[in-house]
Length: 76
Length: 141
Image 1 (spheres, rainbow over the protein chains, first blue to last red):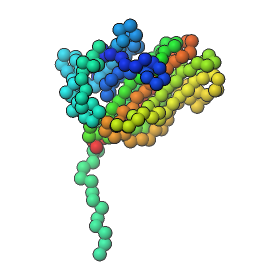
Image 2: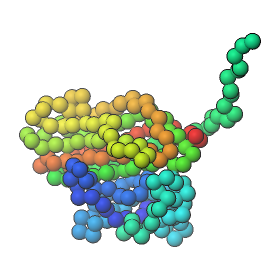
Image 3: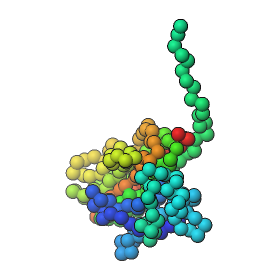
Image 4: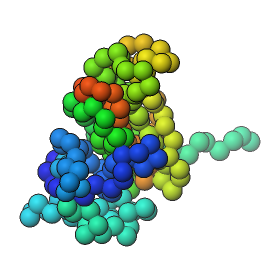
């Protein structure tokens, strides 16, 4: 797994919990509520050699709901 | 005369991968509901989910406040549903089956695009150590 800093979505409420808009990830530590980001572990194949999210790989690996995924929406 | 023989599936994946997700941390007092991990089943894979484990450091909690664990499954293109839920709340007198730790045998198949998430929240006045994990086998679909 590789470490990446990403944006947080949601507001922590029951209906709209804090989350990350990626298919598979594991949170490290806690959320930085000021910067609205958090560090997560991603599967090795979903991160490129420069440590950035591999948008193309995620689109082809998960298809269906992730075919229009854009890393700009998530990288924090 | 007789029935045609059953078609034999030409390929079985006899070498599935073990997939686990685990999160344990001190969840601060007043923490809102937060997704701690997410796992989406890749295209052309299927997953056999065998065990869900959840833990909260204690079940003594201020009246009217909560420390909850949630395991939610969202089917591909479907709506979210909670498959396992642990609640610690003195008012209702229940914990995760009355204990701090619970392991469920959760026999369930997930198909490509399905997502399972572990979430928790702690509205109590003290921090709690909370954990949630799942153990699965991932097969070629």
